[in-house]
Image 1 (cartoon, rainbow, N blue to C red):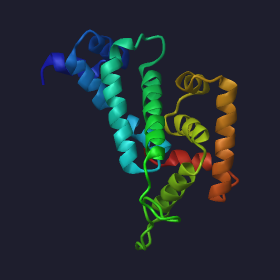
Image 2 (cartoon, one colour):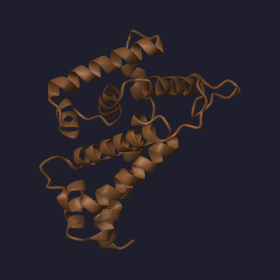
Image 3 (tube, rainbow, N blue to C red):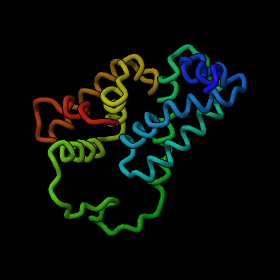
Length: 197
C-alpha cells in the first residue's frame, strides 16, 4: 500500500470530508466505506424491513456523496451523516407507507418461522429489534441515535433539529415503552446496547 493511500485511510473524518469536498474521490470512498455500516444500522433501526433499510442506506450514502461540499465542519461529520441517514430512512418510511400492500390483514413482512431454538443472546436481539420496531418513529429514532450510535443529547438535537429537552423526553418515553414491551422494567437500555449494530 502506498504512503498516500495509507495517509488517506488514516485521515480524520473532517480531513477526508474536506478533501472529498475539493473533489478527492479516494477520500470520499474511504469516508463512505468507513461509515456505511453505521448508516445502514441507523436505517435498519428506523425501518423494520431489511430491504427498505438497505434502500434508505443506499440513498443516504448517495446523498452524502452528492452533498459532501455542504458539510461545513461546524458539527462532527458523523452528526451530519446521521442527519442525512435519518432523513433518508424517514423518506423511505413515507414512500413505503404509500405503496399498496400485498399482505393480507394480520400478515407480516417478515413472517416468524418455526425455527429451532436459538441461544438467549440471539433471542434477546430479536425481541429488542421487534420491540424497537413497534415504537413510534420519533421515539425509535431518538433511542437508536443514543443507544446504537452513542450520540449525546446535543448531537441528537442537532441531527433531529429539535431542542435537547425534547430529545431527553423522547428517549425517556422510548426506553419506557421498550421496557414495557420487553417485560423488563429494570432497563432495556442494557439489553439494547449489548447487541452489535
